[in-house]
Every structure is written in C-alpha cells, then in structure tokens.
Image (cartoon, rainbow, N blue to C red; front, side):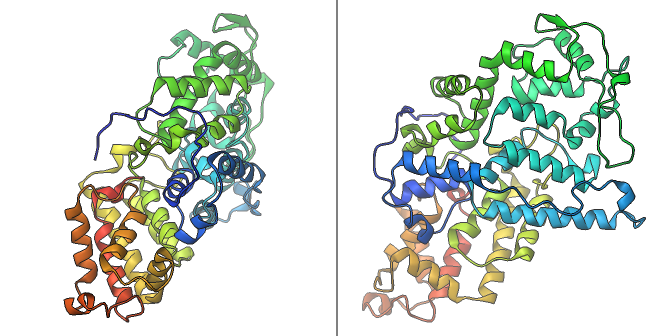
Length: 481
C-alpha cells in the first residue's frame, strides 16, 4: 500500500478516451473532495480537456467568501471578555470555510493546498481579521499569477506577524521571512540562494513595522526601512520589498517554476515526482509568465493525470477522509456535523488554520499512525451512526443510485459496486470482495438470496449498507485516493 515508486509512464498529451465514471471519480477526488454517483453522471460525455477547462474557469469566476463585518477589526472593537468574541468569529469563519471546501470546487481545493504552502498559524497571531485577510489572499490568487501571489501574501498581516516582518526594521532586520520566502515558498531548501542572499533580502524587507493597535492594519514606515545598498542574487541596489520579488522571479524563474510545479504534482498526482513531467509543467509556467491556470489545465487534461498508475497512490489527509466520505456517499450533513469532524481532525493532527509548523503538514505517510488511524475510523463511525439514526433511508438511496434503480438483486454485485465506488482501485483480492459480500448478506437468511426473493426494497437494506460501510472505512485501501 505504501509503495513510493511512480510507475506512471503516460505523457502530458491530452487524454483522448471518453471519461468514465471511474475517471470522473478520480478527477473529483483530486481536484475537490470526491462526489457521489449522481453528480458524476452529469459529466459523462465530456472529454478530459473540456472538463479541465470548465472546472478551471469555474474556479476563476467563483466569488470570494463574503466579507464578515469584522474583516478589518482591530482590538478596540473587541470587549474585555477573555477573547470570547474572537473565538466566536474564528469558529464562524471556520464553519463558513468548511462549507466552501465541501462544495467541492477546485478554487478551494487549491486554497486548501496553498494554506499548507504559504503557512501561517492562527494561534500565533489570534486575530480573526488577519485570518480573513489571509484567506482572501489565498482565494484571490489560488489560480492566478504566482508572482503576484508571492508579492501579496508577504504583505498580509498574518504573515507579517507570523514570520516577524512586523519587528523587522533598519539596523535590526529579521531573517525569518526572507529565509522562508526562498526555502519554503519559492525555491526549495538550499536551491539557488545563499545565506548572504537571505541576509541582504531581510534588509530589503524592512519597514513594515507600524501598527497602531493589535490586530490593526500593518503599514510601511519609511523611517524603519534600511536604505543602504544590498546585493541579492548578484544584483546590487537600494532594493525594497517590490524589488526583491522582481529580482527573485527575474533571476530564479526556472527554479521557482520547477519547485512549485513539483509541489502541485505531489499534491494532485503522486507523492513521487517524475522529472520529465514536472519539468514540462515548469516550462509551461515560465512560458505563461507564472500564471497557474495553464499549468493545471495541462495537467488535468493529460493522459498522465488519468493513468491507472496515478490512482490510489496518495494517502488521504484527515479532511480528505472526512469531507470525501460525505461527498461520495451523498449523506446529509449540517454545520454541527462539519464542526464535529473538524474537531476530531484537530485532535488527530490536522488543526484547521494551524499547520504543525512553518513547513506545514508533510502529508502522505505522515497521516497514518496507530492513533491517527484509530481517530479516522472513529470519526467516520460517529458520522455513520449519527446519519443512520437521523435517516436510515438515505443508506438505501445511496445504493439504489449506484445501481441505477431497484431492479438488481445480486448481493455480490451490489456489495462490489459499493466497494468500488469508495475505493479508488477496489480491493486487490477476490477474498476481500468475498468478505464484504458476506458482511452485506449477514443479516439475511441465505435462502432469500438463493431464491432471488431478496431485493433493494427490503426493509433490511439500509442496515446492510450501514454495516458494509462500517467495514470499508477501516480498510487500508480506503485510506488512499
């Protein structure tokens, strides 16, 4: 299950075959959080290029999250209530964003990716207004121009506080943001920069030190800016913040494109890169002047993306496990459901808006351990128990939709179809399929299957589906996408 070799031999040429349900399930697991059978069927008849262009344009056109009334509040707006109102705003925003994520669009799948790339930790700045402004930046630029994105994220108040730009002035430059700008955000560790470049860049980034009130706007103060000459990537001048970004992209553009396309590849295709593929994507990025949309459109339309070797090779994050299961079953949920799941994700290591450190969650194998695996099982068990108690008939609806109606009464085929809808590559052995079939049939007397009397209208069907799902969520193959 944890093999790291990438055996995907397909190219970035367009995928020419008509998209099947399995193809569509793969696409939506990677570009969103999966989808249920009825929604997937709406895209049958499209080819890969059409679907990629459609979803990218939809992401570009989608409105940003509505601006809350507290979007630019500083601490003067908050009462002396030990932070209760701040916590309320934080929780409200978390719920709003969870609903955005589960809506299954590419824009917020990407904002989810970017907040683990341009990392900040909410616990370090504790300002709902900064959180909103930070996420507005992520949403605005998630599929836009990467150079503009880098420029804007570095000036967001959350980042200025988190990586100490607020304390970086003339004669006392702080190197934290300069280091992470190169090491984590654009070039990769040790790739194309020196310690001297970091030190000189830190001087050029000074000056953003004025804040009249906690959680208030952070503005440039020319008196705290280092006006001396700096040498960055062998370019010498009285460089400032804007100059740093211009020099970085002018001098290191190919390295930037290679690093970013590699991270996008690992997130959307396979944890192990194939240099020929990531280099080709990087060439597209440079040719497009660092626009992200052409890169992702090329990738999502490609034979490489749809290759069988690209499926079932990424370990789901905790949120993939939770939100994906809701999407793929189509079962009901509400804000309380989402918040309960988010709380369990936090407990087992994926705290919304609080990656573990500046390098972010390391993904893939890091998601799996004895405690986290148990937590993932329990999270979905709680959800299934709650949904079954609320409305068991939705479990029948799930299987009837998968089977295209009530007519099929083959329990082995039905249990296999349910299994294959939730596992990206199904099971590897017929023995495993046999176990699932036995579980599905366990509460019905065998003679009713043998005679053909049993069918999907029977009152026991919701319980049969419930028991099968309880089994599937604990299988190794379910942890993959």
